[in-house]
Image (cartoon, rainbow, N blue to C red):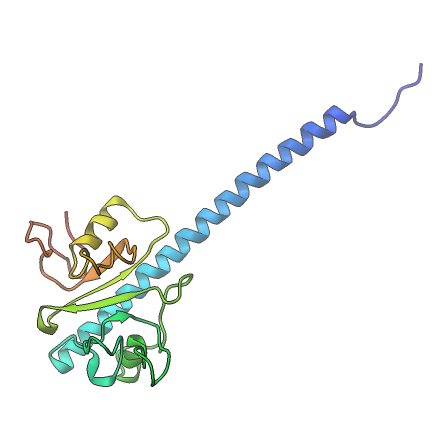
Length: 192
């Protein structure tokens, strides 16, 4: 009787299946890590923009950004998509972030979502004394989504949550719009 060296077809199939399972686990872990990294960037961008808006307010006494033609020109408040601009003959002549950059409040002219463009939104409320900036996270918590509904223009027919699907927001408002006990901290996030 001769002894054959090598693997049987069954052994090869088992090894291929095991390698396939391990590869799929690695890919899903990688995708999860990448989406969490993008969410961290979104949170960081909104914090950076929030600080720029506060410096802008200290200089001009308002959060209204229309004085340098930024944001959706039909509203005359610097509201709408933050990093989107389409030229002088359209509604988005200059991006809000470009205006903040040119005024010396931001270090980069165009700041926008790492995946959606346009992605970040801004609304100015309460006569120019309150702002809310929002993004769409890939992995939001229930708290993130609930907080996004509390900011100015969070809900309603044109709300950032109800119309645009935003699920994360930063605001300078002392307390949420429905006057419950949740109030924003120094970073613009609501305490619970």
